Image (cartoon, rainbow, N blue to C red; front, side, top):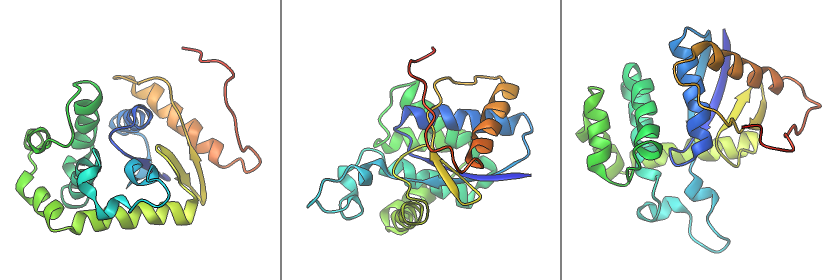
Length: 198
């Protein structure tokens, strides 16, 4: 079984693309053990001299959804993959505001998750502390600076996938398998097409 981690923030379209590949591959039976790691783009974009987003989460448009995702991942893992995909869809396919708790509550209810329990963890600060700890660990341990970053066997790489897999599980599996395989090539630091092939 291949194990890897991948970072996410629901606002990033490239994170959406990569996570859709991961979700479609898992649905198609890929032998992966995936650790989903929250990473706040709001914190990454804090200017020098500004207070960290952890001290003013109300200023960040994605932090509540990130906390809700972590809550589901840790307390209702059987629902996580569905909720995870639905939160990306709410933001990117439906154009919904992930600061709106009604939007988040509907996604949770649609997947049988108690929204009140999730929001209790948001309101008491425990989920924010969890997101912060995982974000800071990724930044410290692997120099992560964005999403999606794949982490495998001590190596980490930011990856931009340009397509969405739809229902093509075979394509999703082969794409992610190639990404993880490239992480094992230590002398390959950057590989970027000179033009967009799509």
